Length: 146
Image (cartoon, rainbow, N blue to C red; front, side):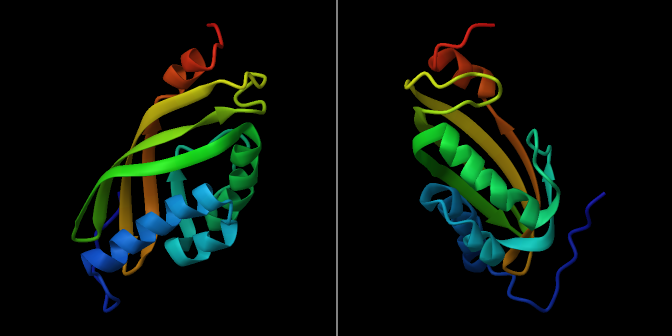
């Protein structure tokens, strides 16, 4: 169980929102070094993506992997709700499928899916992230059959 343990660090909603926006900006810009500003070193991602290693450094290579699979990628937050070290995010993920992803060869087709994430933060760093993406919807949009 994760405890919500306030610290003397800045726990303001603005600092926490900035960390969340920086996380998505790292993917949008292809800049894994931005994760150092957004995530705690021992950040937990639940569940890990196939091939992803744990922690902040384990996510960094996934940015390149993701951007190789998807051009014009955009993580667009639609709603961010921050309260007492926790944040709920509803976002849209869109792009064009230009490389293999989850066993599906590039199709060149565009996709747009919903993503929901719950973050725990300590000060101005995200410590834990639980996420749910509509990957089944993305597979359908790019023409993969199941």
